[in-house]
Image (cartoon, rainbow, N blue to C red):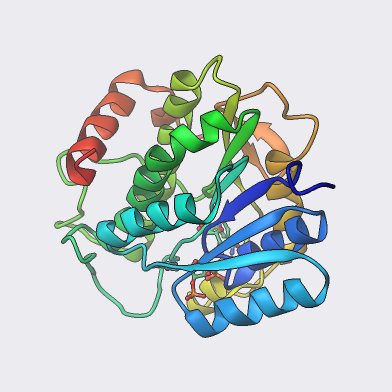
Length: 272
Ligand SMILES: NC(=O)c1ccc[n+]([C@@H]2O[C@H](COP(=O)([O-])OP(=O)(O)OC[C@H]3O[C@@H](n4cnc5c(N)ncnc54)[C@H](OP(=O)(O)O)[C@@H]3O)[C@@H](O)[C@H]2O)c1
């Protein structure tokens, strides 16, 4: 592939788990990979591995628990590449995470809502002009089968907090966002789809929650790559997949009023 033909992908949360494997496989397939993470040493290790195997990768550091850092990540992406054919919003924190109890982001938002959903919402919007200019291009939002309807009276879960509720709400928010995005992007040459990559893959997030892993990152990476580069999804947008099977998500994803409420709130919180 010539320099001009090389396609570029940004993968968030590429320093661990399924994102790391997806980044490596894209690079092995000839993509230039912008590998995002928050840990510089892990990022350097990944870039080293990809380059050793003959691929191209650049590490971009940002803590997605800060909207200012998300904005900086978008700016660095645009400074690093003139084209972006693929954005995979994969970074996330699980149900248990590093500390028990409700946590907040640098901006004061409930942490899982902020990292798992709001960061991707902002990053995607900031990169949309580049994705559109690079069309045909794709967006993949890595959500989960763990979904819980958003309570618009308490989105930040100040009452009845649990790590599970926070995780499942943030994952459904990603799906509502994807359905909206697909509608907004109709005819632009950019498609957006979302998925549950696999159940209890053997990753840090699952091990930290105390759950015994029952599937592999390979299964999850196959499912993500089917939406990211597979031929079967061409021209299809706004869909939710349970691993590689198209399915209906939680009913709130198909409630236009709920999506409009989430979008209005997200625009306000991100200052877009
Ligand atoms: N594992 C499963 O069975 C499963 C099931 C359904 C959905 N998913 C989804 O799949 C995606 C990947 O999960 P995984 O299992 O591969 O998890 P993982 O191994 O824990 O990896 C998560 C990635 O996200 C990054 N990350 C976490 N918080 C961040 C922050 N504040 N700023 C920047 N980066 C951050 C991590 O960086 P560090 O390397 O610095 O920690 C890591 O690269 C998630 O969206 C998850 O919800 C996973």
